[in-house]
Image: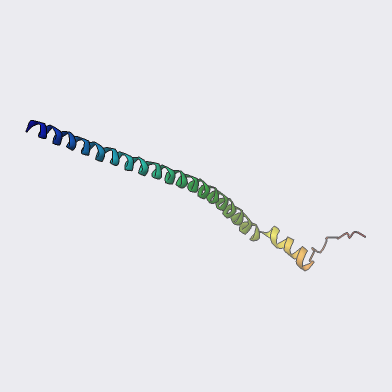
Amino acid sequence: MSRNKKKRNQAGKAGIAYIVVFLLIIISVKIVILYQKDQEYREREAELDAIYQEETERRDELSDYEEYMGSREYIEDTARRKLGLIYENEMIFKEQ
């Protein structure tokens, strides 16, 4: 009986070894997949950061332009360009 027990014991150890190897393979594959996803997410994060920076700059430009539109200088420029208005003492020279 000790031979049968040894054979069963060895078969059990071999079965456990196969299961462990199988689990290691599955875990390794999952690690590789997760690493690839992590890289994709990092690239996407970099893209989104760049877009965020562009939009922040655009917001600042719009804010500056909005401030300019409320200024006297903007009103004068618009009156000159669109309406052709000038000050009383101002002279305009035209090119021929």
